[in-house]
Image (cartoon, rainbow, N blue to C red; front, side):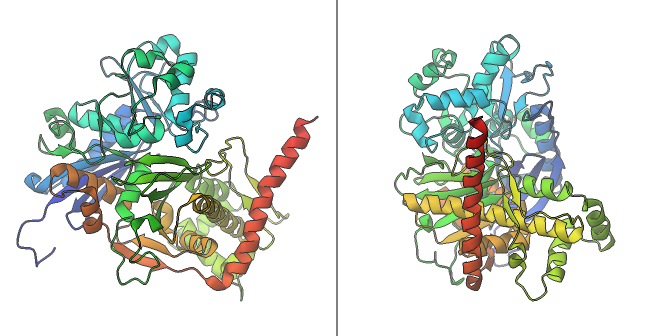
Length: 551
């Protein structure tokens, strides 16, 4: 594999729990993904905006994919294991058995997913308190964070769940507990989703003010009073039971975990960029933003001093890269939005048939179809009369308005494949315009951003990548390893093993650049105009809402 190395190669396991699947990778000390496996996990949607999962189903999938990637590998060479996961809420009783987070009493459905918006009333009341901890979440708490979900459980499932609950875990912390038997929480999850601060810890007055004083009384045992930095070794490593489940040696080092987007950031943002003619070369790492694009998208920017950005989460100290403050912008539906728009179109069956006949994915076929119909125009210019506002699931950043809805302007009576391709293109452009909106807000607050580092499923789509370069005007760096989130999780395991002194050292050695996509600066005038239209769309939505509310 690396003939110049005489010593045996060390390996690390990265396990990533996304919204719809669990993935695992065997990653070597040079950051190369040697083996990879994935398995779908179940999602229940019992009613609108309620999304639930099963921690037992998730753990079983973790075990299945891990066994696949370590098959035939000398266990003594596997030095560490790192988990990342969505910031979903896991509820178990005092004996660590699953507790139902639903009115149906289905105990196996004990996870409220990150994208669940059931706690709208609760988050509104929390934001009305204007408590000082809200300054660390952009001034407004999101319904996707844990306090409103906890309050919803107390108010709606008092007897069946709240009173019986022994522990409330963020999903990444549940996984490290399941592997080690230690209930320690990651600084990343608590700081980003629970209002914990790295300098002051929990603020009793916040929990008392919002009606969750119960958590204060037991000294926060239910939500975490033992906190570890990401990458720090948890307990004594894998328990014998977890080792059997995963197919790994007992005692294998397990790292304090990360939220999935943060693992993606870790996997890409520290890569050596020398020789790629990038504006961030010879600049501090703070000139980079990591963008993790999957079901949703997250925009991770770091700084040496705290920067408070309106409508953008953070600043969080050491939540991703130790010693740096993190700001996290985001879009609640990106991959999910593209899927929704494409699959909901009347021409989707025709697209499926044509893509299958040409042995292409539907998105590869759509990209090719756009090239056919563009004629002499650049592809992006096809949407001169078609504009999308992408907040079909509310706006996370920078407007922090979960009541916003999606908009499409420029529809005709045509329903063919050309029209499907155009609405697909306009949707991707809208997502990129939303990214520009977030980046401009971060820069106005004090960030200095020159380069985007993309990873996640959508980064495999060349149209998505090029539109982000063209619309933001910034070069986009893609990793050599497409599965950057898994590399980030493996970096955690590498640090927990003691093979690397710091996360930064592991980031540089294990993160590798694959390709750079430059913006087409000649298209700037067109996209500046598209951006002006983009911002007008939300103005019009708020205006018509105001008109209707005045009736």
